[in-house]
Image 1: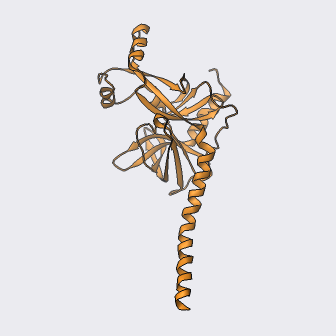
Image 2: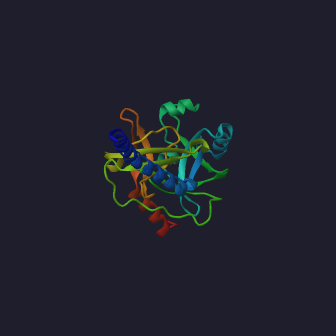
Length: 241
């Protein structure tokens, strides 16, 4: 009888330990099902910046796609990503890797599903950019933006570098001030191509946009949802500045 009782107690403990894990998994799968269709792969073509139009065209034609990033739909034909993705401002090591000289100024062409995207509005301080693309799904929903966030809150990142869907779970570590702007620090894995990826909370609300990664601390730098919301609202209220 005592052995049977002990077995039941152990079973109850095991179930109680597994329940939160299962619940978290169910929430993550629900968020993924809701949001993954809005996440897009951005194909990047870096070329030399030149005032002469003809050499610039040949620069792009000779290189082709040589980088990838992520963006996500925030309205019909509207995509949000990180500003540094579309700026052409990359580090010297990356320039050399792509076959350019360290001191060369570059520009970048962005393609989404074979169609060239246009940068229509940016918030450079918050590392955010808004793009206009063609061929996006109709009636795309504007994301719900996070109103409040707590330390250690569970988060979900959805990326599509090189067209491959990648999902990462993490937690909020805290806030971080960079260049006079407030960002989130998030404990989550990062890699090339994650820039511009959306980060969601457990309510499927947008927490922010993946901006960079601190490899020494293994923390991601995320531009806050409030800045993304403002950028979108500013464009919608004045689409032809």
